[in-house]
Amino acid sequence: MADISVLGLGLMGSALARTILKAGHDLAIWNRSPEKMKPLTDQGAICAPDLVSAIKASPIVLICVDNYTTARQFLSSNDVAQALSGRVVVQLSSSTPKEAQGFSDWMATLNVHYLDGVILAGPDDIGTDQATILLSGDEQAQSRAIGVLECLGDGTVRYLGPNVRAASALDLAWLTTRYGNFMSAIHASNICRSEGVGVDELIALLPDNPSLQSYAQVIHDQSFDEFTASLQVWGDALGHVQQQGIDAQINTEFPDFVASLFTRAMAAGHGQKNVMSLLKVMQNPNSKQA
Image (cartoon, rainbow, N blue to C red; front, top):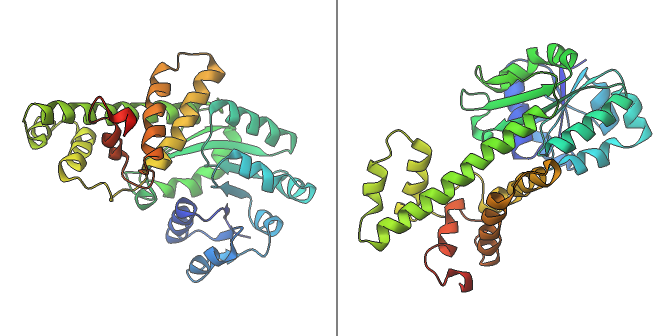
């Protein structure tokens, strides 16, 4: 039997699987597109012929797909439900706290020990001290799974306790700080440019804020074709921030305003560019018509 099964082999799922293999764990894999499994089977992963076989191959099932709706779709058959019973399921897909709670409640009806998790990093960071991974939910699931999951970061995998909503909530809170940085870097750069001051002078003022420095550097270099996550990806994630506000009945003016800028930027064709391409719709008073 394998130590863990990974379901979903997109960029992030594949990075998780490679890191687990590199750490010496026995790994079973499954993906809806079988061709994505070959590079990992060449590295020693067990290629499951179908989803049920992948689940039965290990006591821990890690899910990394686009969203919770997708996860529900492929876990909803009776055969899959029976295979999941008694196992630990770790979900590392994007969600809101309400979705995390709903998924956890559903897993409980299937006799599953469930952990909800988020990854605050890109695929290239997995397995390093730059990969913060937050987990929350069933304490028994955490104790059974942490021995495998801790390899996904270098001392940066954190269990937040039994409140299953916690990981998603912190993810959205962290994302919100990033959107604030995007907006401030762009507007600060616009101030400099409008007054004949080089953006490099702004960068020099930010030695204690490497994130803001990096965003301003993109603007200075006009390197909008270079990115880890596209403007479209950041825009999609912003929808979760907005939805959480609606679900929790808190003020959503900030994410709604930022979302309006993302919508305009994507409509103008910048979706597959660096998120700093928001600059294109924030440069002048007439940008709404740009």
